[in-house]
Amino acid sequence: MSQQAELRELQAALRTASDVAFDQEPPAGEQAAVLVDALRRALTAAQALTEGPGETGCREHPRGAVDPLHGDPEDPLPPGWGRCLLCNDRRRRASTRRRQAR
Image 1 (cartoon, rainbow, N blue to C red):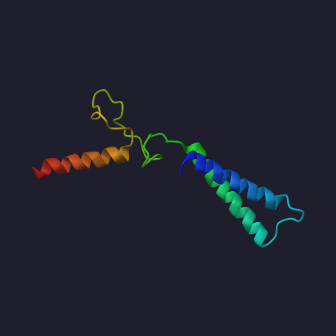
Image 2: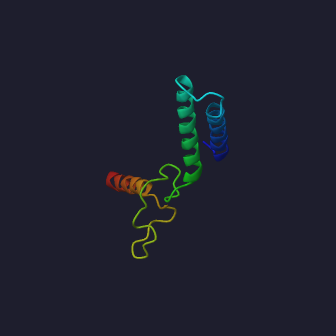
Image 3: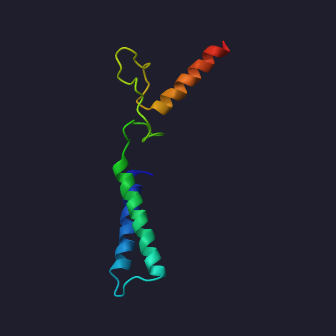
């Protein structure tokens, strides 16, 4: 989801929570469940806004591990490889399979 969509979701969830929380009567029963759901949606949307691309910079694995060889001058990664260990490992396995098939 884009940041704009996440922001709209956050705003909508906060409006719903505000409507329920500031009603004349304290929320009970179904209204309390609606309030809890709205606050959870707001929290999820707010967290998505703060996450960004993550440490790896990888769209697929933003919270993945950083490849320990990234930036190593003695054993550099091939050109075009990023910081994501998961993607780089997949590339390593694919290149190994190609070499074995020859």
